[in-house]
Image (cartoon, rainbow, N blue to C red; front, top):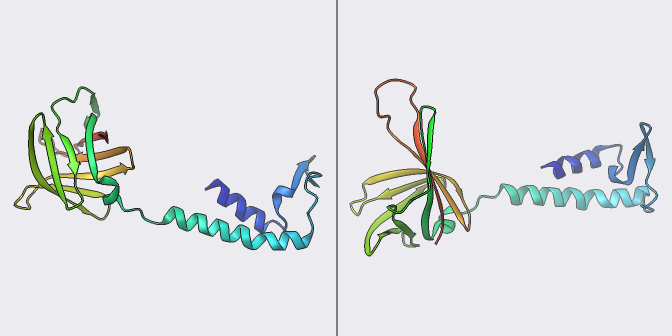
Amino acid sequence: MVWLLWLLRAVNHNSRLDFFYSYRNNQMVENSRYSVCSPIFENRMKIPLILSGLTFLVMQCSPTDKKSSLIGSWKVDSIYTYYNGFAFTRKDIEDEPLLDYQSDGRLKMTKGKESRFFLFDMADQDTLFHRNLDHEVFEKFLIQEVNGNQLILRKEMQPVFRGNSQVRYEIRYLSKF
């Protein structure tokens, strides 16, 4: 983002590219190491710089398909639990199943030697639903981050006690297996 702001400043600064100049005693002085500081060079450089900046911006804004990044086996590394200001992180996760997201929309949960199949579904590239075979939702997660090696899921949970303004959630950190 800083690069893009620099680019816009350089192009709009009196039709000169700012990196050809330095400031000494609050006055702009031409850098001696750049000898091609003519107006022809400056005008030629505006268009490629603007196009490269726009290309970079479009590439950063293009959506990535999170479902294809989700496919594969994932193991839970830790679970962060938050409830009204109290937080706890569990790192000894031996009772959590191994999650294997398959490309056909099936989810295989394996714990020890036992495996069970479920379904998974994604809505709006940021919500992950785990469903039983009757298509009923039994878990809903918000996808915080998914890349080739890490998956971070946030699960909103119901408060234990009655009352208003209660916040309870857990964040699961998973890694590729």
